[in-house]
Length: 529
Image (cartoon, rainbow, N blue to C red):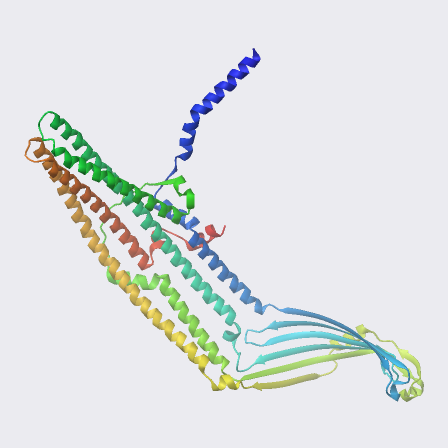
């Protein structure tokens, strides 16, 4: 009995799976719907757009370059050690006969610091020690310790804080340019989202208009068939309606393709999906375009653009960069005059050898006074002896002194950057002017298309009433339907174009970040995590 129940359960399960499989496959094939407002789309793009993420990394790299450039002012510590042994036969009577052996060791510790004016300052402590079997030595083993202070300073070429900090200054300028580029990319991304979002809205709304128009044609086709059946219309009248239905069905196919294209474009910008995964997600816009007339002061808009546009900031920073490079090249044309100053204190110690009758010529050692390495360090630290040196070195690079090609190249690059800035300013003024005029034109267009749509609706109503009393034919009704569909699409496109024109003005004025309350720091943090 138990086996029968088990077999029955398995059979029921298999049948259930067989019956539910088509349903489950259809559910898996259904795209996942995501309903998004324009603001939600923008903030999603600012977190996930691949171009923006790459620009954030570029800015972080420029910031790291500043930290790396500052490391030239970190002190450096050098440690060195050497050891040697020299064994050879004596070649001079004063050394004595046989083989003499000399062993030596040397140690040095040096701490160096780069100075803001271009020079370097270092403190070094070194020791040299020898042990030999040569005769007539005063100290054996012998320890020589030295504490040395050294200051090197260029006085012409490479002199001054600007030249010394050139890597830091260039890194800061590049970082400022990178920040402006990031701002420009954020602005471009926001505008791309607005353009793609409203493009999708237009495509979906246009599809609805086409579907409504198709439904009207189908209703007219049903009505015409009934009237032909009862003899109210000639059979030939159905041809116009059937042609209209077929035409509008074809328009539906194209409208659906436009929706998919617009949707895919927005998906890519939002980084929702890519490749074969594009069809797995369907975006449903929450918003419809609104018409809110605005008046823009052209002079104020131009002043705002000149103050806020990041591309103009990039040109200004580029000029500063080229001007700085020009100053560097001029500095490198100067002769190189270097000051070198050293002050050192020696300390000498070791086993002091005592010869018979205090006469080293006897070569007979009768005693010694012990000395150590520490004694040499102690004497050097007391600065018992006054030793110093000052040197000036003048180097005249004849190639740079005679040729001015590098300076001419730097001047040309500076002039080129200034010319580009003027051209960019003119282009900015033109873009702002065109955006303002475009808003004024589209504002009038929206109103005109609204009136045209209202007249198209009234005309369709009139043609429908006339057809009902036999005063017209379905050809004119179908024509009125097409005119209404076209008027609705034109009005919708005009409204979306108007909204995009406002977004375009915000972009060319450089205020689009303030409009959407976007913080560049937060954008950088969200994309670097």
